Amino acid sequence: MHEKSTLIFAHWAEPDEVATEGIRFMRDDATLPSSMQNFNIVLGNGTEARASELLERGAARVLLADAALLDSAAVARLAQQYGPERIGISLLAMKRHVSWTLDTVSNEDFNCVTPSYGKTGWEIVLSDGTATGTDAEWWLGEMLLLGASMALICVDIQDDDLNVCAGLVEIHGSKLWFSPWQQSDVDLEPWVRYGQVRQLLLPTPNTRDGIEMVRIRTAAMTEQEIVAAETVKAADGEAATV
Image 1 (cartoon, rainbow, N blue to C red):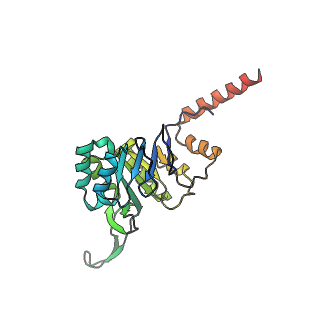
Image 2 (spheres, helix red, strand yellow):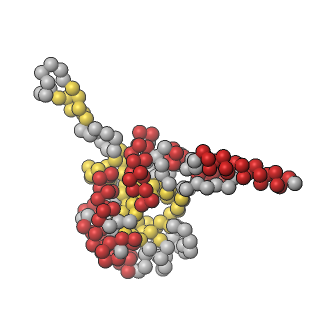
Image 3 (cartoon, rainbow, N blue to C red):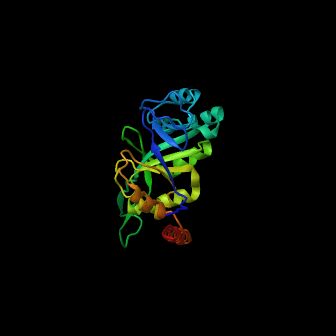
């Protein structure tokens, strides 16, 4: 099939990989290559000083995680010094815990149960797994305003999270990358079809074969593009038999 999908895939880099084209992500705790000009380095619990060190060594972009949560001004300082295009953020997100409270005061005729939050959402988790209570959607918007040019969201999206995902993509568009956090074998087609994800960092290990990759790509195509692709495929088949 000649695809026209707008979906972009990226991969976690191998320790000794030399990235000559495409987008590569690498964790800071991996063995970093001597040349990092085509790599996005994800810091995890790395500090602002570590981010500066990697940027001075030529990293294409550094994505702050815990450091940005602990001091949001770090994003602004680094963006001002090195340029926004070289600064990003990475966040681990999980479904926000919602508690319920029995209201026995507001109305004497009946009691009601009220949730702590009125809608489904995500909260940010530190690299050591500690929940922060910080709303991921709000924090993400604040970091992009401070100068981050990219955000990698590692989250295990469930069916009732797809609206959250689609809403973020609608607001922030191509600045967002998504990747599974703990469920590396999750089906990514719903993320693309219903969550509107268009930039996917594939999990490691990546067990997806060519057929599944085509299926995921097709989910990002419009009906007109699918029809056009099938028409081209049919024409190619007819030409091959002549």
